[in-house]
Amino acid sequence: MAVYQDRAKERIKKKINKFTELAARSSEQKVSEADTRQVIVRILDDMFGWDEFNNLTGEQMIRGKFADFVLKNKAGDLAVIEAKQASVRLKEIHAKQACDYAINMGLEWVILTNSLEWIVYRIEFKKGSAPEIDQVFSVKLTDEKMKKADKVELLYLLTEEASRKDELAEYADRCHALSADQLVAHIMTKEVLDKVRLAIKRKSGHNIDNYEVACALAENVFANDCTPENLDGMLRKIKNA
Image (tube, rainbow, N blue to C red; front, side, top):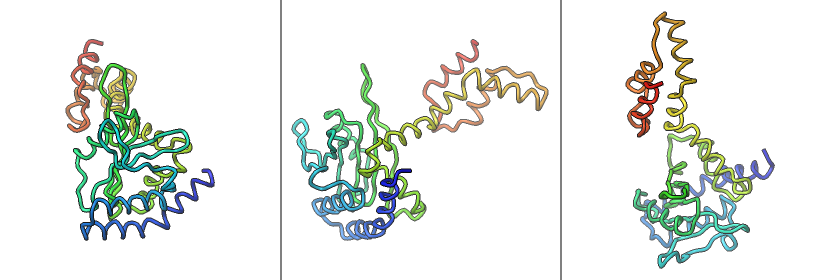
């Protein structure tokens, strides 16, 4: 790991308690959205390493509407940051608003935050179809169930240092590769089903075809929330094969 990456993570370790307390206090006191934005700017500057004056543009107009912040580097605009009042619970409607801004600007990344919680979205632009929006990760500073080290690793991805080698994109790609849809798609291939079928035969002595294996996986293994929309099509293809 490069020295600057270690330094960035160490900076977060030193600052995270301070900003967790500040954000929590802002939420409890129900400070205004304007005051929350000041806290967010301090976090972006002091903890994430983005210069307030060189890397942040506030109230940028996008097709007649204003984005709270646009994050940028020397190469250009990187992400839309949507800031909500510290006491506001972040909802899908807030994410949609921010993503609409990003889509209109052709930007890949959206950060939704109320200073206490940081949610990152990625927008994939495809020719001939609507952009696809995926949540990459979410970190709540006061989340006692998440280890501090895990928070640091995720928050590091929002730093200026991480942007130098597109580490956020690399992380998102890895998450996508290990997503339920992708894993199911890989499992429901002839190559994998063949190996499962042969393993069953060696263990039990039963001759079972790939379609039976696929149906058993679909019914008994795959949770409803990770079943791909085209599962029926996959099963038909396996049955025909």
